[in-house]
Image (tube, rainbow, N blue to C red; front, side, top):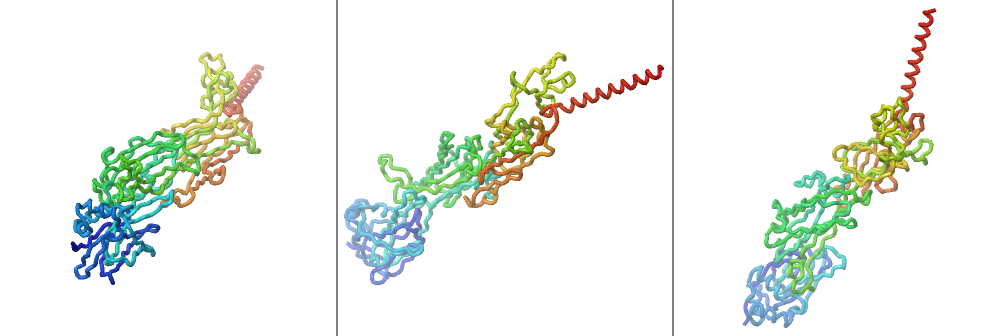
Amino acid sequence: MTKNFKLVLALALAVLMLIGMTSALADAGHGSIVINNAVTGHTYTAYQIFSGTWDSATKKLSDIAWGDGISATGQSALETAYSVTGAANVADAIPNTDAGAQAFANNIGEGANLGTGHTGNLSGTRYTISDLPDGYYMIVDTYTPAADEKGVYYARYMVQKVGTATLNNKADKPDVEKKIDEDNNLSTDTDRVYDNTANIGDTVTYVITSRVPDMTGYKEYYMDFADTLSKGLTYDANSLVVKIGSDTLVKDTAYTLSVGEYSATTGTSISVHLKDLVSRAYEKDAVIQITYTAKVNDAAVIGNAGNPNTVNLTYSNNPRKSGDGTPDNDNPDEEIVTGITPDHTVKTFVTELELVKVDKNNNETKLAGAVFNITATEINKVIVTGQEFVESTSGTYYLLTDGKYTTKAPTALTRSQYANMPADTENLVPEKKYVLQDYTTESVEKTENVAFQAVSDSNGVIKLTGLKEGTYTFHEVQAPDGYNLLDDDITVTITSNVNEIKSTENATTFAWGATGANETESGSGKFTFNVENGQGTTLPSTGGIGTTIFYVAGSIMVLAAAILLITKRRMGNVD
């Protein structure tokens, strides 16, 4: 028995495809389907499920029979699903709602249930399937991605009767963005950058953003944010916060968090999985924001390679499947229906300064033992390579009361200038001796005071590793053996082009700059500079107490001369 079949509207196309459609009278029993905003590379195939005659007056399909787009297997599947027999009875059993049309299409599915299909052509963003006989069609989106292709997604099934119809493909797939929040102002995007510079020990705030997609047609929706911190970054436990819109999500209720163990090779992995997105009915396009902090550690990569932090998003991409992005527990070979975004990476850059003490007349001669007080505009930690004075019974250095060191032993006249002298004033041997040896600290905390001291090593080098942009001042307090103190401080200002590239991810090559220093190699982001010392006559060799000796000796000579003069005058008066 033939029954009228009313046009069923709506079933979207694309990860989320909303139908906007207009129906018009088809000429000579044929029509076309035009899909706006079609995705390049995708093929949209129309399968005629029911054939019939379009009545332009009643705008109904009559004389319903099975079309050539459904196989005998598909016909049987529909009859079983609706507990009726025959094409007309199946058509009559379909609820006249969007949900009814979606369920109908899902009952057909793909593969063996389908028969002959009709494809079309893409022109710009319009995909047109022409010369379609009157009937009721289901449209299936197919696409074969490259092996490493990102951002893949598929359309929901669409059903439409011809006449002629125009469908608006409102493709909606999520993406993800990552930035560094320089001022920790999480309420605005003003101070967020893709790259920054930092000291070892600095805390960096990361902000990951996405949005709630249109999840129409999905039973479940899967979003997993996979974040990777490189080895130079240490994740701050319990710092992660997830928000959707103005709501702060509860861990293990609305999302799950997995943090991998830190590896000195690969760093740390973090996974944030949003749960039950469909059932929670979040507003479409609501902002998803994930924030956390990490510290720059001693393993930070120095120079222009930077310390990357990378995120990507895995998401449900096929509403025609289970939609949750995971295989069926009973069938582990089931297709995993997810797409993945390209990686998004931000970088934190760290630099180093290397001061090399050299002879003024011969720069090839490197000078050990120069002591500098170093100040910085801002610093948390620094790895110092240089020399240090270490107490040792075999040492050849003595500590002076002014904090300097000398290799000259004390005398009765200079005894008071030495530290660690015994209580016995007749004993001129200090209780402690020191050796000067090369060293590299693992990490020196500088949080309370930005001033610290370093000594040039056997190669004349003082190296400070783990610095950010800023100004660093070197004040020489003790010259190398046989050399005079510098007359002026050395000031080095480190700059970068981070502010120029803050607004565009990977917009240009990161570049450092410094006044008073030359890069060790082009583009390395590491700085070295020579500091020249001239030879002098200051004694002892380290400049500790040499002039004091002459002052004392001179005073004794003046006093002796005065006594001699007075004595002679008195002797003259006696005569």
